[in-house]
Image 1 (cartoon, one colour):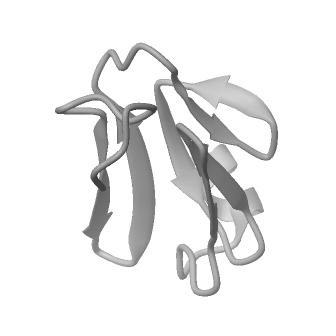
Image 2 (cartoon, one colour; image 1 turned 180 degrees about the vertical axis):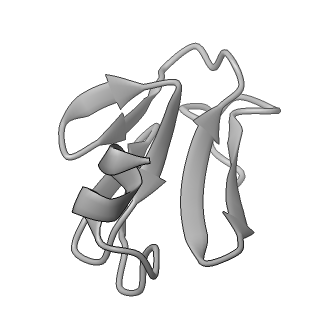
Image 3 (spheres, one colour; image 1 turned 180 degrees about the horizontal axis):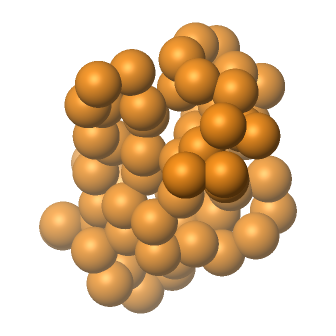
Length: 72
């Protein structure tokens, strides 16, 4: 994304074994999931991610239910 609100290495989306995660790489403006600033967060369908001035809607998130991941 070419915008001043996005750091050069702002963060990354990582998908592994059915789990979608967003990671912030120490960005200046932060990474937000559902309005809360995060460093690393599992994403689920319906989550709202904000990176700089951009809103990203998660249509297909992690395959596992939130309850299963919290219990692990």
